Image (cartoon, rainbow, N blue to C red; front, side):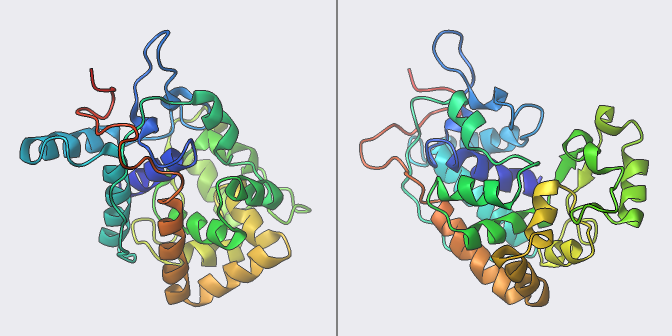
Length: 270
């Protein structure tokens, strides 16, 4: 669940800022929820955990802690309890009154993106290429469904991003029906529940589960240099990841009298 909670914060901030819009339920003719956007459907998980946290907070301090802030805090704590860095989280975000499914389909990076696509997607929300490589290390924890990497299960020896043969064989056992398999597979084959730099070490031996993971190393240039740095030095990864999370958590938040503090994360207050 730690990886899922981290991903919720990421998928929220990339769509109209860190405003809890991802949590809003679809209401016909009123709200087109982001949960049904292609990058999110049958993919993002953990909403029930956020709802439980919100319910507990409303019992103790009603109307104070926004759902957007819960996202940010849950992401930080998920990283910390998994062995990663515990960084300061700025608070005071407020919750949106709207969601934007169209923007979710447009803004969220895809699992088949190349480096150029990834750099552009992150730049679109004010994040650098270095931020992108550091935040990709969030895949140190969490899982992905077979359909997100099924096309990689038959490696092309001429493709520098192809899976190693041993890793491909392992994945074929976990996804026997290919894209039709509904299994969840660890994003980090080495230390799947430990937040560390093994994700980057895996890329050096072509064990990046998603195409968008492996291209960070297999594409010559600055991203490869950063992968090498983080694979060698966990402290460098932890430092850059913390900085990037603070930057991401500050993407166009609602503050002051903007938006509201929702009573229930899935619905705008009546």
